[in-house]
Length: 211
Image (cartoon, rainbow, N blue to C red; front, side):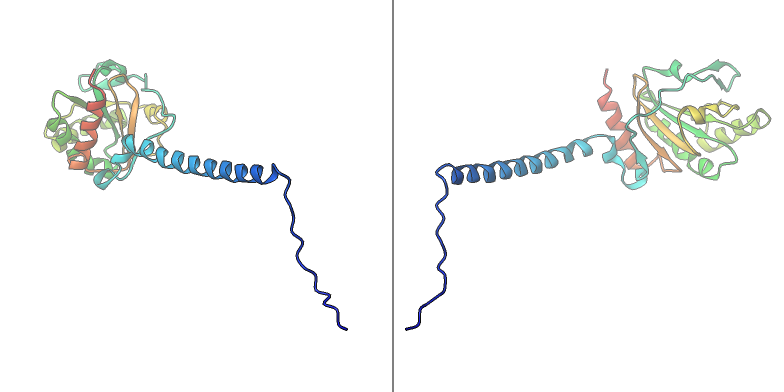
């Protein structure tokens, strides 16, 4: 007589608390996963609520640094030959542009910076800091007056040290400071500062600095 030698599964009886602990572990893992998803989703708006959200269109090159350099204390010369520095303008929203006459992108965007100053006259201060040497100062002054239709006065740092102060590898670079002198954002390379995208950016900076 043949005997069926197939084994039958043995039913395990879990200890009374084991199943409960297993269920709790699964729930805990699911809870952590849900919290992670919620945290990740919640952090996205924080990333886009800052000035980086304006890095579109003509302002696509806009950058917000985690630890931006302080507002430079370096002496600069105004168009009357007087010595000043950027701290003299604290209390205003500043748009500081570093440029030179031999920098083609600098010259190309300069008319739009003049337009920006005219658009926000009395509300912001656009400060073009030229880094040409002394021998080319008069040329820089004339070209600036022509390109901006007299909207912007010349400032100069012929030592070019201000480039190191703001930690930029080249020009043009335009840095926006709030009324307290803190860097808000910067844009390296030429841009259209007469654009609607630029206007929206400046309006946002002004709105965040109402006092």
